[in-house]
Image (cartoon, rainbow, N blue to C red; front, side):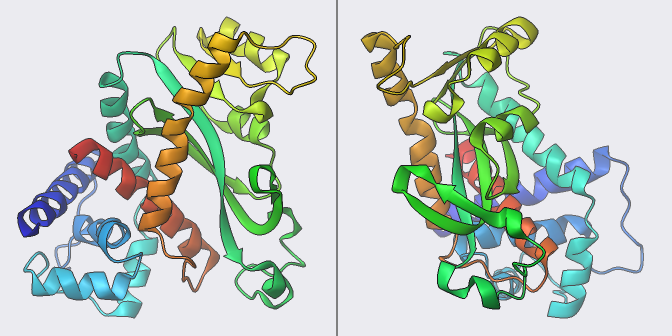
Length: 282
């Protein structure tokens, strides 16, 4: 187990360091902690410590991965200064690897809620005051419940490896989330979704522009029902994204602790990136 953790932490650090180097990023010569070590903390934290950065920094120091850990305040300032492009580039590398290892060309899309707080506490939420963030009120149709928070729109391979994601307010419809994605999938790919993605116009647009076949489940009263063979395939392949959400939820705590809105969103992003590393390594 210890060897596996060591290999995982080392791999994450090397990938982050190489990405920063490719971007032309140079560490301040006066700094005793590199930018790659700063990026390492939230990713390892999401994998092993339920996004508890303090516990992860203590672990990395004790295990010898980081020689000069920063205090909580300075670490947070450094973390928020990490270029957003670095996180995106790291995920892009993992996404390309997942696509190469998915010869079937089948992908599944769905969304999951990330709660900011319980519904009973919405009026007392200080991180995202409801007066300024009404768009965070959303509905999870599959469980017939309302929530206050964000949605993670995720596309995964048939094996469950994430290839693209988008974080939106909870009120955004799944189809709108799909439209916000770049959909950088290979030509000829098939994207499987639930009833929320059953738009004929969207299917025709993706087919014409990206040569991507969008197949979505249809309502029971639809005038053009899917053949039973496609319904079976859709339900089977969509299990991969549902499994991915289950595994991501296991990595994340019941309630993400953050002091700033940017910190909250960064922890969501780090959790998905950590899961992508997990799928790439194992």
